[in-house]
Image (cartoon, rainbow, N blue to C red; front, top):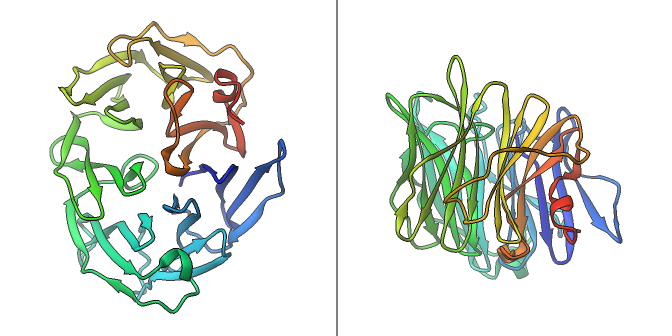
Length: 344
């Protein structure tokens, strides 16, 4: 279950799931958050939010009966993408690259015995999608689904899509054999890249944070064993994979997050009820010692995916793919507005 903060067409949106009530969203306009609006009352807790190439916002919702529906926030309409034909409700996450000519869908599928789970890609060709919308009569021509790899669920989700541009994304997922490997593939509408392992461990992956900039992939991993935890940082650049850096070791670790503010990289994490941040002045080559976050902080800290239209962010201002939020008030953004005063 994820929350989403989305910046599109000059507005800020907050999407969140309320148990038993469905998916809601709020809009930030004229210096304040408007009252919440219901997107759909039927949701299993699994959903994703995407921005189309035209800046419109779409949501893929896994409903209580197992169907997956695509919702257009602008049109206030929906269309069934997958119809559940089985009495068994399988947990499916769907996300997509959405363009004028159609959608490149990504979702998890399973074998007939539901013992093995696959990352699956499928293209849907739609004539003039942004003009016809969900209520149009244009023909939705689907390619055959293509199973990419066997996967295991990531913490807090199944897989994780991060956009590089409107037609290029990076998908992170886990594989499991004797050990756990977290890695990624790059996708466009036409191309499927190979699997790049990022980190392999025998420990439990408790949480992670990924930040994809123009030429670098930053990754923060929270690993736990029976007695202690480690916070490990690693990055991938054009010259290759960096050596892992252990930022912190201890117990009672909570959620971790990466962001860039004014050309400095911040690796943040919870320890007990205290938030710590480690700053890097050289984009992850070295880190300062963790320092306590001294400003006011909510008691129920959570995380939200952060999406922007066209991925329009600048490392000299701020660059992030996650935000800390108040889990009880998912529109209440924590920390980043303190670090970057022009966020709103």
